[in-house]
Length: 77
Image 1: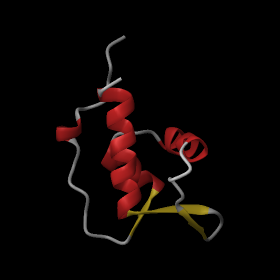
Image 2: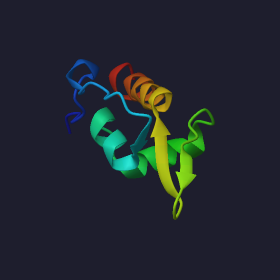
Image 3: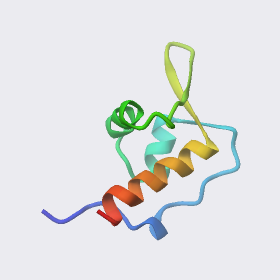
């Protein structure tokens, strides 16, 4: 089955915001929300802020980190 993830260069630009929801990060990084939740357990550097009913809010540096993890796992193998 061919890889369905777009190359890093095809990802949308990251807006100038302070916080991003898991859905926004999923769209910005082309990674499904359940994968993001799993990565939180695997990569200790990834610690989104949890507020209001345990909702996750990611900061700009975490979006960059997720893109880097994605690149290392999916692009570079």
